[in-house]
Length: 380
Image (cartoon, rainbow, N blue to C red; front, side, top):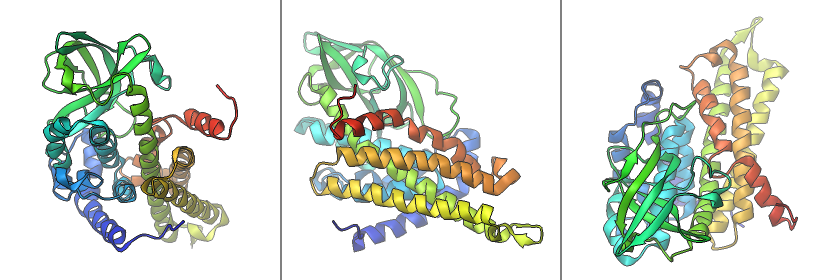
């Protein structure tokens, strides 16, 4: 098992670091304050090929590995989690289901614009009464001639209401005990994007509830086999858990870097605060968290890239890294003291943003359930 990065990975990280520092970091605080989704920067990300990192070259992608996607997400999230989740959702939830399960016609119709970043897509799984219990999906799609008629609602859907959102892939009940996946273009009559949420964090990320009222799409918008929606979204979530872990890693690294610099510069009782064990040991713990999260993230990504089973490792990476990120932001805020309570500090924004890392793509409790079952325990 080789965790060393290739020359291409190293070059990608350098490019992503420069882009994140020059095009995102200077504006992230203002975007957060204004709850602004920066479409122009998203389009720049498309020009860099970020949305096509893992897509086949026939659709305009780079044909790269999942490790490359994790590197890009990690570097974006280090300076702004809103941009990290925008890329993660656009690729992992928007592009990948169509790329993995779509017909040739579906790929030809939707992938070129999505891969180029000219359009964004979301994935509608969660509902007001179907979160961790995703099998409780209540949205229904009924056949009427050559159309699906969709009625229901979805909650917490990323990239669902931007100026360049072109579609949302949703799960819906298509028969008794049957869940299928259907692609719904955003301009479909009866597709209603509700007002955005007022969120604790991720203020520059686009998140809306969706409502479907007699929303009609052609039968050919069915993604993959009818009744295989549950299997499809479970596979999608396994990938997403590695990506969220990569986001979490970026957060931990930012907390480590910011805290280390602050501990060297800030003085108290005539000495840098980093000279006191109370602070130095916190920073040592941040370093350990970053190292551990990095190994878990890239082990899971390596297994996926090698075509080996990775479900258990993805859950472990997501569980540890997301919880470590929340701890890291709390400890970094403590190191900064009163300054850490001010919104203009990066650690304060990361503190607000980080909590949802323990919730999205499967809560910590769900990860523990997956891990327990993977160990052979008959847990329900």
